[in-house]
Image 1 (spheres, rainbow, N blue to C red):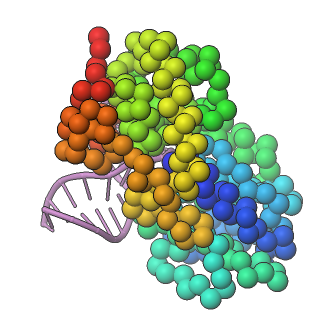
Image 2 (cartoon, rainbow, N blue to C red):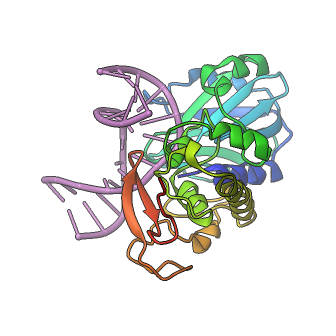
Amino acid sequence: MPELPEVETIVRGLRRSMPRTPLSRVRLKQTKKFASRPIASLVGAKLVRITRRGKNILIWFDDGRCLAVHLGMTGQLCWTSPSYRPDRHTHLCLEFTQSDQVLHFRDVRRFGRLKLYPSKARLLAEAAMAKLGPEPLRISLPHFKELLGRRRMIKALLLDQSVIVGFGNIYTDEVLFAARIHPAQPAESLGPLAVARLYRAMKRIFKQAIAAGGSSIRDFRQSDGQLGRFQTSLKVYQRTGKKCLRCRTKIQRLIIAGRSTHICPACQLLDS
DNA sequence: AGTTCCCTGAGG
DNA sequence: CCTCAGGGAACT
């Protein structure tokens, strides 16, 4: 569930209380999924910055190394105090010299990823990173138009991180509703007006959701443990059977691109 | 490009 | 007990 706005919210929150002292201790739960023993070698390094690429959180150290964190579905990355008691879902704790800030990573369903890279060059060379598409908040309209010149269903295309990054199931449904586009519409069949609506809806919804601290649907928490506020602004996601806020038709749930999909059947017509 | 699987907790 | 939730890798 963490999509671009939730990941951006986490990154901004993590930056706010970043300790500048050396890492003093790494506590790691060794599971098959997070077999990340090399992370322990970060002791002594200092945090220099925290950035985002798509849904990946990049934690940079003064020796050039980078810890890449993907939250998957239920991952949480929070600052806590040294008195925090790791539970059975806490996989990593980073402690810092002369600091009360402890960074911990929890992931109930273990769909997340932790990986340490020796340098920026090695991170960028990683296939999973190199093939990521453009950032929705940076992309130009002409470039966006270009991405849509394929036959695939628009929803499948938006969800594909190698086409464009940051979309997950919630924001895809919301953006398509706002742009009045049916999720099964072949992308290349969208006219210039529809593409422009989609482009503007994408920018607006991502920006508003970031400003609201993301959407807390199930597990999402900001890096300080607070809930996001954008869930109250969602117009179609999980509103199956409720009235469309634009035309009062009942919202339908269907399966598209293997994902549960929410649409207003009157506002989002499939045209051929 | 579509399908399966990973993983756990919530809800029926 | 069963089904569902879904990001992304690894298949086919």
